Length: 219
Image (spheres, one colour):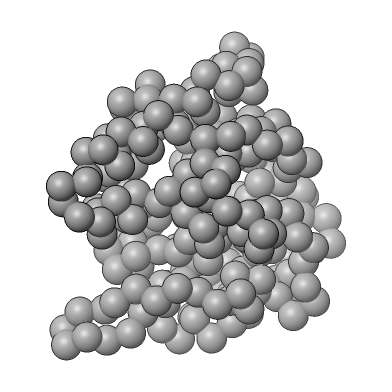
């Protein structure tokens, strides 16, 4: 994972972040002002799930429904991810879900709030929260959903469509995978939805079959 820049959320965290609990980190993140997105988002949307999760899923940012609820992956993309997890044989109870950016970036379009891609500066500002989540969770596998999440973890040269479904060795998990974000399937042509969902499930089946994931389940 790229090094933390000095003008980031790191100022909200102690030097030794492993002394904190996830609940304490969540409380600190709730008052984060490291980038201007706190002015747009209704609230900080921190990660949630099993504290002994075998796999951590990292998305780009909360969407409209997640921003209102204060919980990640509870909107349409989250429901599609749940469907894919069932098909791949991964128990949602074994997972933790979070985002590279913890506030919703959007622009108005009538009464709707339209998703906007976070900038590199906004991703970098938020990175200490994700780094701390991974340091406390010690996951067997981390799965990035989409390009923003993958590049936040692996650097700007990483390409999801080129490297999806491949296992990578990383220092912050036993293995790293990347695949598409479920929202990209929902935004795509309806006639391609089942095929693209099948490709996502195939990627997740590779996660479930990886030795790090299976070894963690045996503990």
